[in-house]
Image 1 (tube, helix red, strand yellow):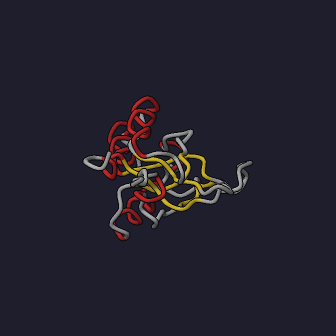
Image 2 (cartoon, rainbow, N blue to C red):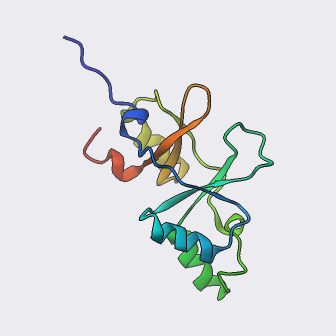
Length: 132
C-alpha cells in the first residue's frame, strides 16, 4: 500500500489576502484585524510575475516599524516595511522539505503557487508543526 505524501497545497490556507504595496500601515492593520489573519501578501501591479506578489507583511512588521520609527502609520506604506522578496513554494512541494526551506529563508509564511504560478493559498510555519 502506498501512502500519499503531504504537500504544500494540501496544508496551505486557501484564503490568501492581498494588499497593494502602496497601502498605508494603518489600513493594513485594519485589514489584518477585520479578516482575522496574521499575514497579507503584498502586490505590485508593475511586478513582472504573473501573480504580482512582491512581499509579505504581518502585524509584527507593522507594530515594530511604527514603534521603531516613531512614525504615523497613516503615512508609512506597506512597501516600506514588508518582507521582500517573499519565499514562494509550489503546491506540489513535499511538506517535509518546507520547514528547512522556510527556516533558511527566514520566512514564517510563504505564498503557495499552482503549476501555472497562480496563488492558491498561503502556508505558515504553524501549519506544518505536528504535520511533518
